[in-house]
Image 1 (cartoon, rainbow, N blue to C red):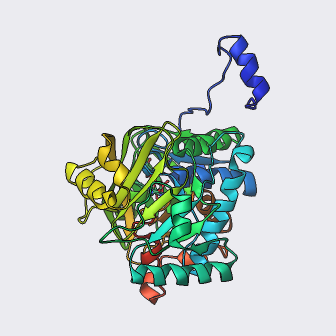
Image 2: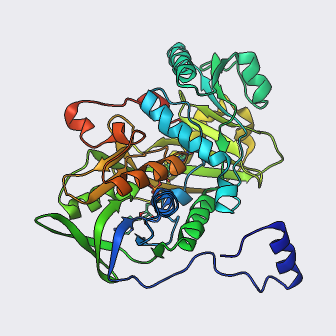
Length: 415
Ligand SMILES: Cc1cc2nc3c(=O)[nH]c(=O)nc-3n(C[C@H](O)[C@H](O)[C@H](O)COP(=O)(O)OP(=O)(O)OC[C@H]3O[C@@H](n4cnc5c(N)ncnc54)[C@H](O)[C@@H]3O)c2cc1C
């Protein structure tokens, strides 16, 4: 793989960009692999990359029914933060946030990580208490996040109205090194680096069945034929229940649509991410000037990857009191993705009842920020056959053992 650099850019500019090679290979599937990963979203691709890079396991295929990064990874609002409440969540999300800091250099791909800061507003007494508790927990976990006063919220988020009649701002939980990254670039960067290490990424290849014998998994049926494998890792977000059914087990996961929208582009007005969880909405401003706006998940299970008018109305109406400026903006586009929600709003990373089948799912509304850490931890699990410390608390059996990792406050609207 040729390295991207300022010199490469200058060289290609001089020859009309005729010399760029394809970012990743598009091989035909082999008959068998050591590891098959289903789903070329960020989590699947990061897992493949770290398997090859950290563990030297390169006989790996990533199978994707559409195009890579076309699922939630390419549909999310790109918020990155690690200020979760529980120790095990803080550990994996902070590992992830820390990896994001140098990911562009690691992958030799500009993922546009922008640590512009994330402000989570407290607009009720209850929320204020919850964020104070989280700030204390974060301090104990070694995560840099702090409570700030309404005045400081106003200093950081200039366009905010902190004196709203229904929901005045009572404070904020501020993580200065949280921020955003370019979602497609994260998928493309991992894909390019994994492909370079020998991983086969096979697009337009839907998994339609899971083959097993008395000892466990033996391979998969796909739209491109049968492929054998020793280990199978299912990383398909909103389709996790469907794949689990193919393998013969059930997951405690519900699939719902989560929507987002962008406004027309305007001059820079917002240089951090701001979340108003009480009213169900959050915003940041893209480099193009559009306000990127998201809200809550649909209240009913569905597999609909598109937006609805009712959602625009609800989300924008909710945000107008706190951000009056948006009442004057035209909304340009909206879209949806299918997110996989667990009861405790924490992910599942672990072994399954079928020997050789591993699962990574349940990231719900907040898994973009977790891509590097999750890929790192899932690769460790696939290499060893069992999860190490980072992933171990998120095993599937926590639901039968009653060992929940409750992040319903930290992860509900606050992606
Ligand atoms: C509107 C919206 C806003 C969000 N905002 C944020 C945010 O601000 N911050 C944040 O951290 N998270 C956010 N998220 C959540 C985040 O996008 C997801 O948690 C994350 O992208 C999940 O990544 P993934 O790799 O697990 O899944 P995906 O990116 O969905 O990838 C799964 C892949 O599996 C493929 N697949 C499915 N079935 C099959 C099959 N049978 N065979 C082969 N391939 C298959 C799909 O085509 C898909 O490409 C948001 C999500 C949405 C929808």
